[in-house]
Image (cartoon, rainbow, N blue to C red; front, top):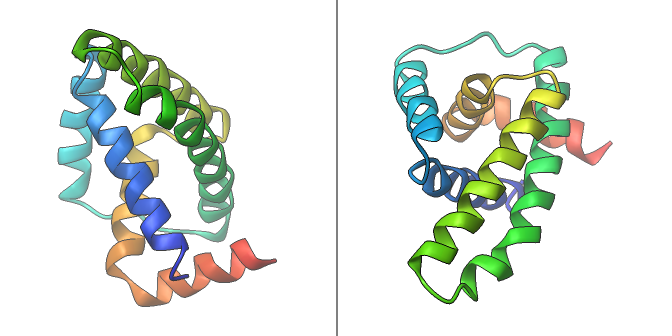
Length: 125
């Protein structure tokens, strides 16, 4: 779990950074802020979807991380962020979650040791 949480946080930070890059993403960020005010029920089915989404988002983040770091200028970096953001949103949706649900799970996992343990058990199987 010690590796999982930093990865979740890093992925969330990358996704949040990317979210500031496009108007569509800004709307998602506003939805995320609203989602943070209420918690959702975390079922095993939701966690299973989250694990799939998280894995796919991590792969996308890794795919674009080097490109982002080596961007020639701010405009190029923004384009890379937007491209990564779109792929991440698609990956989350393809896993059966909304971006708001995905972000809510991340937030709750960070705050709930029991939920962290459940997620750890699911990812180690």
